[in-house]
Image (cartoon, rainbow, N blue to C red; front, side, top):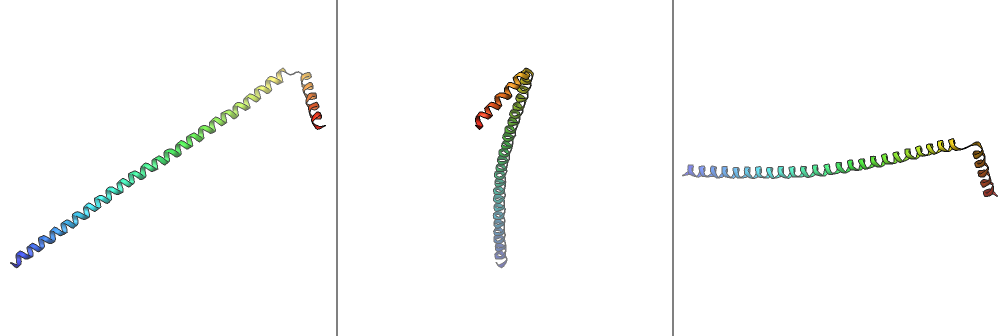
Length: 110
């Protein structure tokens, strides 16, 4: 009878150990799944932040390019206007403009 009781205790202890091992494995799987889910969420947030930063950089580059084109357009337009006026203006026209400018300054100062 003593052997039977010991065998039963050993089987009971073995079942208890197995149950504890199963609980540990289940807990580890749950933790691994939770960690994987958190990693997916973190990755998605990181991708969103990087996309937003890239879109901001693109918008900034576009704005800079538009400004540069406008600035160059103004510079070219002024140069063309200067050339056209210089070719069409005679020395008499030039003297007349200078005299008018002097008269306007004189009128504003006095």
